[in-house]
Length: 419
Image (cartoon, rainbow, N blue to C red):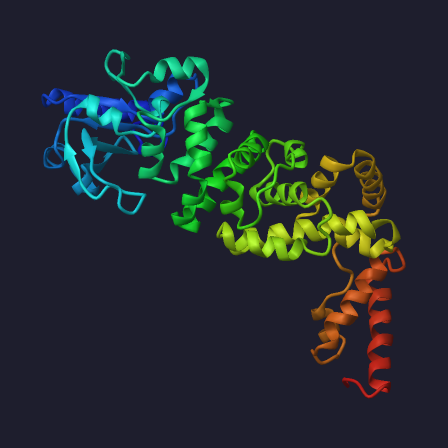
């Protein structure tokens, strides 16, 4: 039996959390699994992260766990490492005023019931006794889980006013789990939608990223619009347009593809303004540079498939079909027009018979080896030679070099670059 660390199986997150909870319990403290990990287990989902709520003060947690790190000691939050996992250990607390509408100005250490009642939604206010699996429920979370309901703890308007980002979290949880937002909570969100302007664009964008990389993304989009959150989220006029394209995307569609689908759902005739809209959304959601490029490229290819595809030559069709984000744009086309998708897909299959992106018969190194000096004309020559290759007019390196030589000689004759 090998004792090598490389062969040792990593501990499961729950086992690591149980080990940390045991350390606290054996030292005489109360320790419960808290929040999302309890919710997910009761829903039959595997929790990836575990949080522990305890009556141990931060200094006591530091004394029990070597290498513990404070990430918010004034809020009673300490990170501990156990069996290869990081677990957040937080002291039971109540919270003061949220003057910035995101974080409490101060906290007071308290007990489990008060800690549960300061949380956002009932389904996130549950505790679990780690050793027995007993659920400790002070807020009716189990009943709402069984009923499929997102309900704010206490007064919805007050709870959402504390932290405006909770409005988006409610939408994300409802879409992810297929739950409904109970009427009073929903009305409080709609009434306070404008307050979302006080939340950082980075946080808003991250919530949208989580929503739209989930297979239930269309439900999230519809709910955002139903609750009139879309105006602030996207920095544009509220609409009730159905997110039909988004709902027909593949379940594994990426964030940029989902945004492209939603943009087309909200702007049915976007050709003249789609790039302007994409730029505005990119700023509103703080997209990364890669996400910005992907969104705009997906929209551009989609437009080309709709408007000019059938009039393109073989080389241009092959280049487009082999380009990045073509598959995303094709999925978008399928989501709105099945027949158009079938027509393009058939053409791509026919083109693929002679390779969509074969290795070039000629490279810049080949031109240099043939005695030509590198220069701006290289790219144009290589592009035209490759187009001829894609169209089937060139089949050997020798023929490709001969074509390039003729083009370079013509440039020389016209007063262009010399050998």
